[in-house]
Image 1 (tube, rainbow, N blue to C red):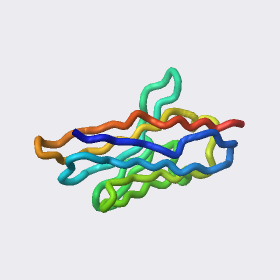
Image 2: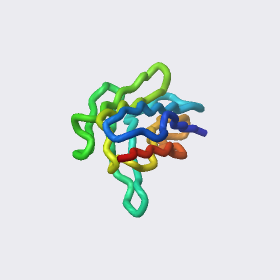
Image 3: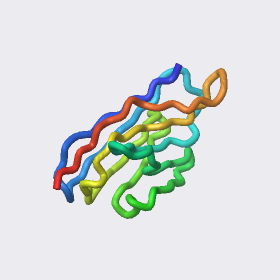
Image 4: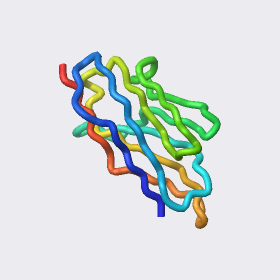
Length: 119
């Protein structure tokens, strides 16, 4: 079994910053991509950022230049530094880890952490 847990969400004013963290635990051989997704009320879940085990990253167009994804492979952790936050960034943010386990590759999701940006 693999568990993924996010932390770091909260309420922040527009223009402010937050840092999200995510840790994967369990029987893990290795982790391929790790990423952050978000879902706002009434909208579909969308990609925020993803990072490979080698450190290559991609971002959703709406967050480019404001958000930075990073990871610590030794700790099975991924981070999302969010700067210049806007009210439209308000959403539940989910962490996804592509985990190699003894029984194969598993796409594991966390429960989400709420981010609210006030205007």
